[in-house]
Amino acid sequence: MSEPILKAEDLNVYYGSIHAIKGVSFEVCEGEIVTLIGANGAGKSTTLNAVAGILRSRTGSVTFLGENLRRVPCHKIVGRGLALVPEGRRIFLQMTVEENLEMGAFAQPPAGIPADLEKVYDLFPRLKERRKQIGGTLSGGEQQMLAMGRALMSHPKLLMLDEPSMGLAPILVEQVFDIIRNLHSAGSTILLVEQNAQAALSIANRGYVLETGKVVTTGAGKELLASPEIKKAYLGG
Amino acid sequence: MNFIIQFVNSLTSGGGGYQLLNHIINGISLGSVYAIIALGYTMVYGIAKMLNFAHGDVIMVGAYVCFYAFNAMKLPEPLAMCAPLLAVCAAVVVCTLLGVGIEKLAYKPLRAAPSLAVLITAIGVSYFLQNAALLLWSSSPKVFPSFFVIRTTDADGESVVLRSVQLGAVSISYVTIVTIVSCVVIMLWLTWFTGRTKMGKAMRACSEDKAAAQLMGIDVNATISLTFAIGSGLAAIAGALLCSAYPNLVPTTGSMPGIKAFTAAVFGGIGSIPGAFLGGLLLGVLEIFAKAYISVQLSDAVVFAVLIVVLLVKPTGLLGRAIREKV
Ligand SMILES: Nc1ncnc2c1ncn2[C@@H]1O[C@H](COP(=O)(O)OP(=O)(O)OP(=O)(O)O)[C@@H](O)[C@H]1O
Ligand SMILES: [Mg+2]
Image (tube, rainbow over all chains, first blue to last red; front, top):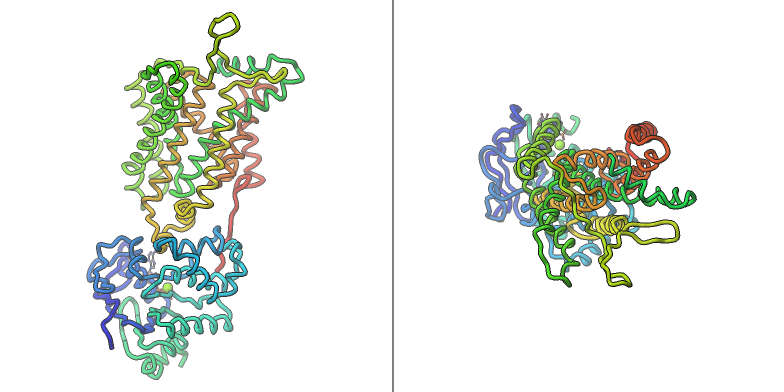
């Protein structure tokens, strides 16, 4: 295993007096797919938001490519190569598809943007057909593609996806996982949060299981898939 | 109020057939000032999600700065033409700094506070500015200089001051022309800025979703500052134009136009730039029509009654839209 590019140590995040994640530590190595799974409210989204700088941990540290992100303001983090596709997609509903993608490239030099747009359109031809359409009028699946495409515009060295299959029809879920697999084989490093533990664990190199704000188990994706407790708790027996 | 009546009367004393046209022109002129103010309101609301009730008082500060800068300038004759422009520029600079300063000192610390706290702070800032103006410039009215006039000499070599152009029986003052043109230029510029430039698009992104905008790498604080800067700069221009048409300058000069422009912004659909433009123009025309055909005293009541009806029928305002989120 190579050096971790992302290392989160002892994260503690509070919402007011609610202690949402309690001493979470994990790491992601170059070229891996790592997944965080856990029940609703376990703290998966909170963990990703703390890494992306939207939320701040009271203790511990997030180290990305050797740099401690504690003092890096949230809007500078994407420029370091760490992109988050947030829960619920959060595309800009009143902006066009192309404008959404341009916003993804906000921290990039403008000269490279047309070429990057073409790359994203190659990956998601549906978006190319709809480049002038307002984001809010896209279907749920198209919005998810747009959210992923938008994150890819920032040349992420690590792409964090928070429930990319949420609310999608089974066929579209398949598609989303295909896309993740393709991105991975093209060299992307991915941190994936999923409700769909079965699908997530089967494409992940490693997984962490979160329970009420704590990491309770960790292991290789295949191992976790085979583990009886995990099967019982998350895979429906 | 008197000067408004006089202003209206002076322009409508032409032939009866042209009165309607005159009212429309006056309405558009007044509406253009409201529109420029409303654009500031709507942009700040769109991005900071707050009603900046001090916006009207920034107009007043702009007008005072303009007044003093103009009087202090003693330019030699060929350059004297530029004095109004320079005075307006001074006002824009001061108001831009003032707007950004107000945001940093009064509103930014309340970014996470309930919106009611921010609203009350804004009202506080409004009174603060009015009282500061009272201290600095006293309550005695200043007569705003006639900016938009052309000084020439007539056939007998006597100097004359031209205030308006005569088109048949309709006379249009230069202030009116400058006001309407400024408003259209500002509106077109803002549309271009928010639609085509990187910073303008970042502004729209912030107005929709600040956390997502930060994830894109947009500096939300800087964007909010820029919004206040633009809004306050526009307020300075509005102040100069307003006082050129109604040249009575006191520390409360900005509050009524501020409230009307806020109304115009809501009328057009708050947060929408074309909405603020349309709302401002319609409000101005309505107000002048109500003054001319119904009653000077009741004109504001009529204007607000129309507003209430519009909002009952279309709660998001004329051009406001509510996009529902997909889940
Ligand atoms: N803004 C908030 N204010 C207060 N509590 C919050 C807030 N956001 C999350 N929480 C709490 O923090 C805990 C972790 O929430 P989080 O969103 O991280 O869960 P999750 O694992 O992503 O769940 P899901 O699978 O449903 O998305 C939950 O108990 C939740 O109630
Ligand atoms: Mg979640």
